[in-house]
Length: 197
Image 1 (tube, rainbow, N blue to C red):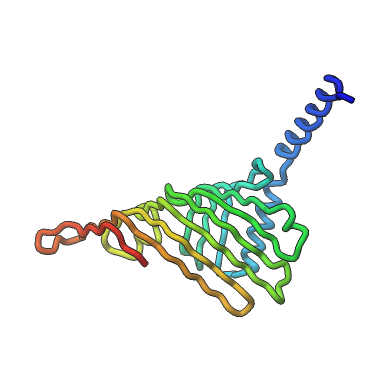
Image 2 (image 1 turned 90 degrees about the vertical axis):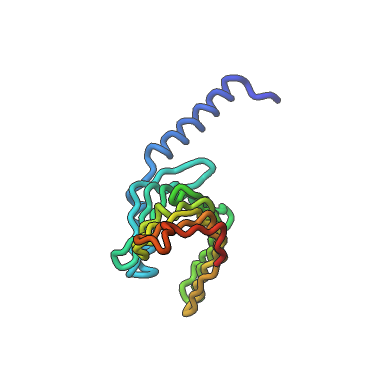
């Protein structure tokens, strides 16, 4: 039996209205408050500010203008961050999400696994950055009296398993330049093709 045009139109109308109201009535402020408080519980020294949050398709949320600071000192500024949950994991002990976003004109993407039980508590994040403009990263600029520039990329892993925390990574800095405050032997800058760390 073939559905009639009328049935198809009503179905499309109901789906369209549902999607519209889910987007229009999305509780952006409530989700933002929940995320900020949850991150603050993990580490009181870390402060997160989010301009606003919106739902996106496929089912995900997008955080706009995210600033992360540690003891009132800026660590990271993200233009946006999209968090895509793996739907089946929402009903298990371990929640798994994929993420991607813009960071200092570059990209950040990866996956995270969060254990729902704080006793066994664990957070594991595997990520990759690429095309990050070092000259836009204010914390790095503050670390040196010299002006620095270049592109940063690489992989990182963060693991918080109960009392143990670790962060490892392999970073590659390409086309790196240090402009010297005072020229040394008439050399105004130092240039490096690649630096691995």
